[in-house]
Structures are given as C-alpha cells and as structure tokens.
Image (cartoon, rainbow, N blue to C red; front, top):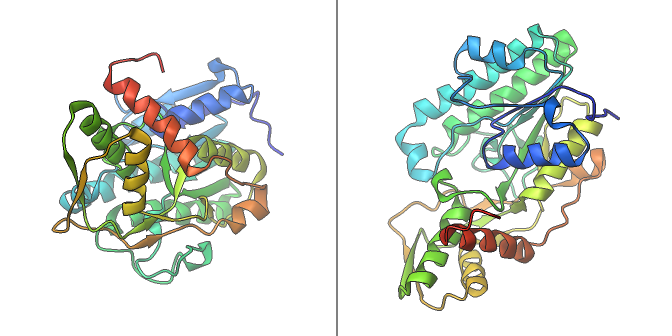
Length: 315
C-alpha cells in the first residue's frame, strides 16, 4: 500500500470543484499542506510543454484532474477545442512526468468515454465496443487516449499510471458556470423558489437515466485507488444506481420546497439515455463502496447552493 503522507503531490485542476475536494481529502489523510501543489491554469498552462515541465518538477505523485468541459450545447459548439485541450494537457503532462521520474500518476477519465450503445450498467470491458455518441466523441476520446497512453507507458517504461472513470460527480462548491447538470438544476430550482417564479424550464424529456456520485465518495475512491491500486485496467467510480432526470428534478423540487410547474423543452437534446456504472471492479480491486445516499447528498448540496445564493461564503 502506497502511503501518501510524506510524498510531494501535484493536483492539476486542484482549484476546481473535484480537485479542491481531493486537496481537502489529502489533508484529512495527513498530507502536510506544504507537500500539496495545486497548479492553476493562470500560472501553468498545461497546453504548453513548458507549463507541464514546470508543474511536475520535484513531484512524486500526480492527480491529473485538469479538464476543459461544458454542457451539451458547448460540446456541440467547440468540439475541436475540447478535443485538443483535453488531449494535449494530459499527453504532455504524462510525458513530462515520465521525464521527471514521477512515481505514480492518477488520471481521471469520464463516463463520456463509453460507446454510445454500450449496455447498461457500463462495464470497463465494454469501453472499446463501439464509437462514442456524436455529442461526447471529442471529449470522451481525448480522455480515453490518456488511458491508452498510461497503458503504453506502463508496458514500455514500467510507470505506475492508473485510470479512473467517475460518473456524474456532484456536491458543494460545484457552480452553475461549470455547465454540468446537477448544479444547473439545483440553482434553477433554488432561484425559482426564492424569487417566487411559478415555473422552471428543463431541457429534454426528462427520460434519460444517470448515476450520481457524491463528491466525498468520489474523493475516497480516488485516494484509495491511489494508495491501493496498481494495474493498467481502467476502473469505474459510481453508485451503480440510476435515476431519471425527471425523478431527479422532482426530488430536488421537493427538498427545496418548490411547488411550481416543471416545463420540459423537448426541442433541446436529451443526451445519452442510460449512463449507469457497473462498480464491481472498484469494489473488488480496492474495496470502494459509496456511503452517501442521493437524497442526503442532495440535501448537503442544496444547502450550499442556498447559502451561496444568499451570499453566505462561510460554507
């Protein structure tokens, strides 16, 4: 088992939603703050080789959480940018880490890497059974190439690189500007409740089913894998439990206390219909099992959004 306590650790994307929680998780595990280095895009442009070289200097372990993402429309609007930025950041970082003799790299992939027609629940063995959806292909393939690179570098150079694929992660501090579904829905319902609006509008039909993983559980999975997993095969992180978007919106409305009408804009895209993770490998390889129920996780997340809406920055 790898001890993280006395290692020099780089967290790319460490000022973002998931990255900032990973940094907190490292501190809870006893890693001194002085040993944790967070590279920000302002100081270290990982799209440039020089930025990667400077970021990895003196580091022993890398959690690579840097990503350029967005909602469905953004993925349709800038597919080239999403592909290039995500691919070049990861590829260059891994090569710079190899040259710097970094001991371990944890790359974070995405459920978007799965083929459009992969059976549900999504199994790691089905990752290559077909093409990604048109919406996800640029982002999903860029992330999948980091898995390929990690496996190739393990075979040729003996590097300890693992690849984790979290499902839809949610929780406090994920802002609506991220473009992700959960903060967008919660923010919309909270604002409607506070402003007294009689209705909200949600894209699509509400039929797609998703697997949502609370951020603390995601962090536990990532850190436990870093400590205990050393293999080339990718690993899903999820709950294995799905909920339709319609059911999710109804649950959020209930928890917020919003009693208005929910209008579905069926002219907008649904995205893929079923995205639920098979979590057997994570449980078998390093004992990962999420603890937070969706309802309890939503309560904590809604509380943060309500405080944020009121301008309370203490939580």
